[in-house]
Length: 179
Image 1 (cartoon, rainbow, N blue to C red):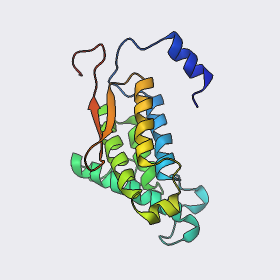
Image 2: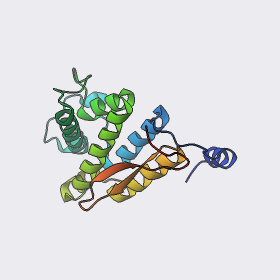
Image 3: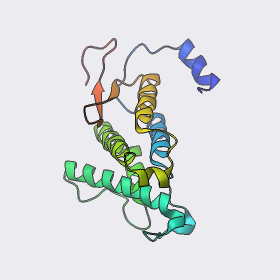
Image 4: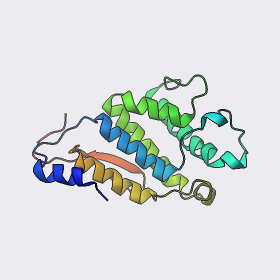
């Protein structure tokens, strides 16, 4: 359900132009979608070092495995050794989220693609679904992402291709070419 304030704002100020930057508010909305589709993504302070097979904290461990794969694929694609902020007790999820919130827009779009792609394949694994108990399917997460892109008048959309890998593409409304 959309809150009244958003419905009112959309009715009073329909978007007249498409933007191609990713504002902080949108990035935060994406993180909420990740939490719904990839499960509990924060490592509680009382469990800074989680043993890999600690059943009580298995959802945290499984979610961190997903974000570790995202981080690894992103770093490989960009020729990086690792993402900044990886020291100390930061979990893979925390590292990806922190970097996502401040990285350039093109890199943020890469992270969105890698994450939604990993969520899709992870949700095909019955163990992942059993431990994480996601509240959004991968398909519903892509639908929600598209709704957030549209409501923020951001000129991208996400679609599922032949292998259901989430891919972002430009769309144009009242604008000829993306930047």
